[in-house]
Length: 157
Image (cartoon, rainbow, N blue to C red; front, side, top):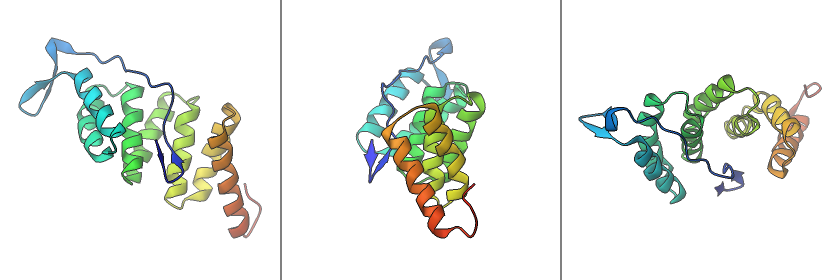
């Protein structure tokens, strides 16, 4: 999805392998089919309702904390709804689980950039651009380097 130049869509989409024990996970007072909830959340997200998607994804991430695809979609939903702290937390967890995830580094860099934390964004954007050649990665890196160059009192590190 491209939201005002903030491309947070990853392609191709991956349907996560959700473990459904005993027919579902207990959420609230009833059982929930996690895969069905993930599909609903994806529909909400793709329909332009990242808040609705996040509400559906939060219990799935709680039930499946190591499922990267679900956590990534939650991070994207937070990002697209300007819940930057939530996006940052999810992306840092993804990077902790897989430091070679170039997309997580890129979106974390974009999240930090959006929050005005350019110096913190820079290493993540550099890593993403070094790991995978992609126009969005290169543009984000260039934009942050230019901003820091204009506002720096010393060399950009």
